[in-house]
Image 1: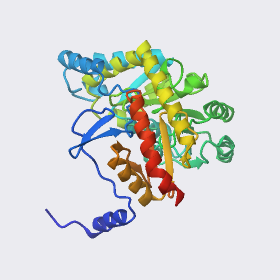
Image 2: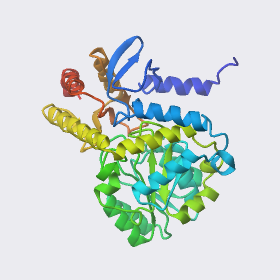
Image 3: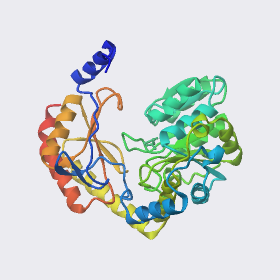
Image 4: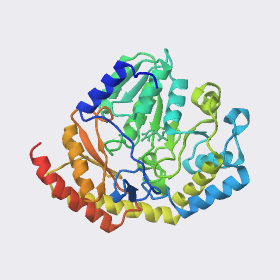
Length: 394
Ligand SMILES: *Cc1c(COP(=O)(O)O)cnc(C)c1O
């Protein structure tokens, strides 16, 4: 191996000293609340498998059945010859479920956001985003080389000021559910603002779809918004759907436009047809009475968790979703809390800057329908014993 350049060593050392070094952990089993790694078993509260579908037998059967019929690899990009029947079936089922003219699949949510924003925005089409939007939305603007302005988190009047200051109409973009805070965007007010100012409104509902709203239709459904109010909706399959990949739901004309200009759609292999088949099975579960039951269990876990935490001196977020972060602030203390939880059999990774703003390191606790009541009790008891002592000295 050649010598590592000094600037790489320096950057790593800096991260290490600031308690910000990130590392992967290898799980010895499927994504379930029971996580095995380093020879131990933990109850996990940091996956985005909100409905517990990642290891669901229906999805496993669907992946096997689709692979037998359509193989494993897409073999080419959608536009060359990689668009197979399971992709088409999934696109049509999603469009039907959400009430959009068209749906286009992407290999990941990161790529969907890069693709949509880099195609729609440009030097003459600015982007305005919530300050806490997901990194992939921000990166889309960078790829577009467009003007990017960010408004105060969840603040519609701050957004209005920016739109009015920038004379030319552009793209207004927000998360539906904020990934590190769990709170909801004021979607109805933002949609109205976009309409008044003639901006195109785009929502990334990665954490809302499947979990929230009528039939699991997500954040838009909570505010009765449709395809007219939100012309561009991005959803991902790596969270509640329990698979991987993503989609954009939009009008025929915008989909035709993206098909020409969204480079992360054009220049990449289609998602595995087997995953498309499994994702359709996930959608059918989300739409079924089992999906309804899973959402009800998740909601009752959220209520229990917030009740228990309200009794403790901890900083909870104003969140009614599966994302229930506890902000500790300091990165060292957050890491220490995460390690202390591990000794009690609870796994929750510390989320630190730059993923979250400086001084707001947190335990990003995520709840799932696949947790049991006992899992929740273990979590709350462990947090109580670890945090009550730690948080006091904040
Ligand atoms: C997870 C996430 C993404 C990225 O989706 P992947 O499919 O994991 O690449 C995009 N947006 C938001 C808000 C997310 O939480």
